[in-house]
Length: 291
Image (cartoon, rainbow, N blue to C red; front, side, top):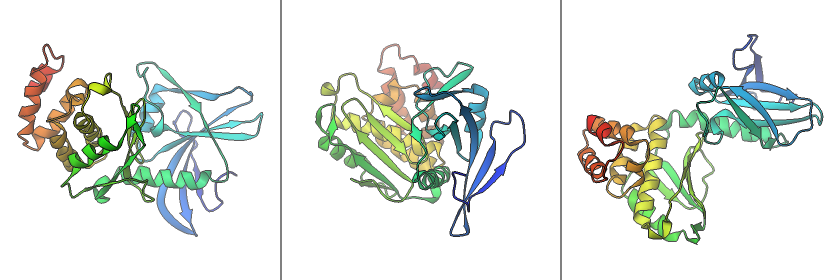
């Protein structure tokens, strides 16, 4: 009843399948090629905030699908709908637990179908990213840890200069996909539309150069695009980031970066190993050398 009448809902009659329906999106009577899966939950209480619990096995199944999964909670007490996309859930600090609690903050309204359409489109385009280059990088936000974000974004533009598949802009593009880099007083958030966001934080930002911070942001962009099929672009970005990024060797993605760089036969992989071994007793040093 809530979705547009021209959208096609195909119910799935399987117990514990993990999804209850697949919804194909139509526009003006024509198929768009976009669709999403649906998981339905319900509650008869007036509790706030609304939440539900999902099995880890189900979450892993959703992550393996090529289409996004929308989780809907029907509140029978207030006759309202609440929803969250599984691929946009916040970072899970308890990924080893057998279940995960999902808190719903988005309520269904008249504009929701248009938002669902845009997100289904973004999810599809993100997973075929190599077909949608060049990619715009939107530098957003006015402050960086209490300071003007201008110098940071100048450094970011410098770090990305000369890459034909990257274009830095200063407003959100209307079309997807694009990368948003949003600065704030507590973090910088990097997100490829259609994918989850990555939050970057620094312990002592006043002692941290904007060049190094920009390189860390480039690292986050590299992993975002590489995981969505644009590995060549991701490799180019990593090559730009290695000389100045300290987050790259501090994070748990060091071996992933080494794998990408060695597949490209990139000399910068040697530089990354040197930087890693310059840190005394680096926990990922042997791993990087083996890769």
